[in-house]
Length: 297
Ligand code: GDP
Ligand code: MG
Image (cartoon, rainbow, N blue to C red):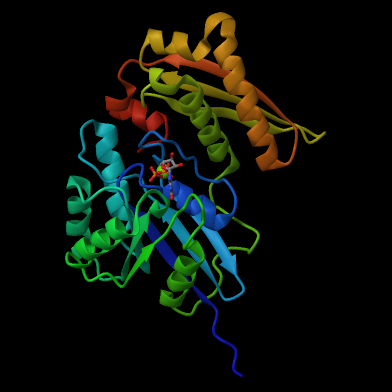
C-alpha cells in the first residue's frame, strides 16, 4: 500500500471571547500553553500551538476574539484577529452551543465571507445543552455560510475533539513539518511565563481587577546550576488596583507569585526564582506608546 503523504499547514481559530478557543487548543495539544479564563479577552497576542502527528503537522493560530472595538487595545485585538485569517489553510470558527449567533458572530461571518479557504464551524460546549437545541443551532448556522464541516464538540470534556483534528488534517495540503515534532509552540518561554503570571492575577483577584493588567518579564536568566531567575512587572491602571494585587501585607502578591512559580517550574522543568513588581500606569490600555512598550503593537 502506498504511504499517505505527510500533510501540514496553518489553521486559525477565530471566535468571540470566551467561546473556548484557548481551551480547545490546550485540549488538542494535551498541555497547557494558552491561558484560559472565565473572563473574556485573556488572549491578547497571536499564539501558535503546534500539533504533530504521524500523518501531519497542524500549526494553530489562536486569536483574540473579534468584538466591537472600544479602546485602542481592543482595536489592536480585532486587527490581529483579522490578520490571522489571512494566509492560512483553514479556519476554525468557534461558537457556543449555548447561545444563538450574536453581533460578534455576525461580524465574523461577514469577514469569513471574504475568505477563500475552507471554514469549519465548531460548535463548542455541547456538554451544556440538550440535543434538540444543538440541532437548532446547527441548522441556523448552516443557512448562513457554506461551512466545509460542522463539528459539535466539548473542548472541556474532549468529546468530538479527535474527529475535529482528523477533519482538519484532511484539509491540509501535502507538505513538510514546519517545526520539530517535540515543539508545542513557537512562543518564547518568557512570553509564556508572563501569560501564566497574568492568569494568576486574574484568577486570584477575581472580579476586583479588570482587564487593565499587563505583565512584562524584565529579566529571564538561567544560572549555571539550572535555576531560572525571572523578574516580572505587573502593570495596572490605578492605585486601588495596585493595592488589590499586592494585598494586605503583600499576601496577594505572594500568593500570585508562588502559584505562578510552581506552574512555570513545571513548564521549564527546572527550579525557578520569581520576583514580582507592581506599578501603576494610568490609562495604559489607551496609550499607544504604553501599548508598544508592553508588547501589544
Ligand atoms: P476563549 O476566550 O475563546 O479563549 O475561551 P477560553 O478557552 O478561555 O474559555 C472560556 C471559558 O469557557 C472557560 O471558563 C472554559 O473553562 C469554558 N469552556 C471552554 N470550553 C468549554 C466546554 O466545552 N464546555 C464547558 N462547559 N465550558 C467550556
Ligand atoms: Mg483565549
